[in-house]
Image 1: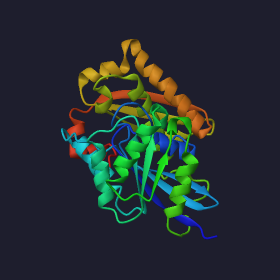
Image 2 (image 1 turned 90 degrees about the horizontal axis):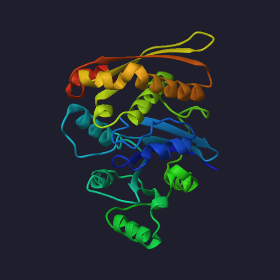
Image 3 (image 1 turned 30 degrees about the vertical axis):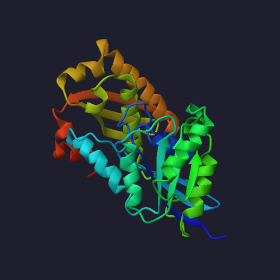
Image 4 (image 1 turned 120 degrees about the vertical axis):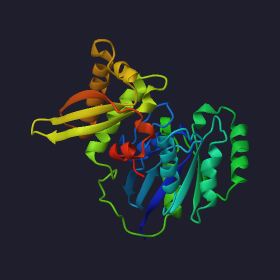
Amino acid sequence: MSKRAGHVALLGRPNVGKSTLLNRIVDAPVAIVTHKPQTTRHRILGIHTDHRGQAVFVDTPGLHRRRDHALNRRLNRIAAESSQGVDVLALVLDASHQNEEDDLALAQIARHEGPHLLIINKIDLLKDRAALLELTSQWTSRADFDAVVYVSALRNDGLDDVLTEVFAVLPEGDPVFDEDQFTDRSERFLAAEMIREQLMLMLHQEIPYGLSVVLERFERTGRRIEIDALIVVTEDRHKGMVIGRQGQVLKRVGTRARAGIAELFQERVHLNLHVRTRKGWIDDEGLLDELGYAR
């Protein structure tokens, strides 16, 4: 039996569950997950290898209509460009509701000549199966999909069906990555993202969108991993909010992030966090480059 291998881009608006789906498929916390839009800010690969071959899933920032600053525009560009040069496009929808931003992802389907899948996620939130059939009919009438898959990524439901349909349309080929590799991202990147995840979960209102995390040190000392991380905020008033009264917010972020990093790497971790203001970084192309946001 010939092996199949290729790339599958997961497209959709913010918060449809692309990152949760990716993490479940590769069984590792490759992409951070929160309920806030713009949690995913990078093109991240999640790699699944089994007896059928290798499917490389591409998680992308959610396509959205906001154009109010350079970071938003760059995230949209990353998402759109991630659909180029891949073998399969998968449109991910939230079964419970859709809006006009879903159309931005659908437009990418029309530009792609390869196979297309429709993945309807969060089916556990839709109790009326007739409504699910109506939703399927509505979206399959708007684009040529090779298959429709119903999943609840949160509940680990339907993931085998996703892989079955993906391998059915991937081209024949040899794996690109090692069998035990689950992402293309470095340990430094994964650690920084885990810190940002905890910040987004613990902070409210506009603060999470104006912060970024940079690792200044990631070093194995033999006994443990030593990490020094810089949290960058866009306004001085946010610095105090991130630190919290008597440093309590920063302390809780550090405790939770350290536990997640230690579990992922199966090593002891010592984590130092500090905060610095870089005014207007979200609207400065040069600072976006410096902070690691790909063009």
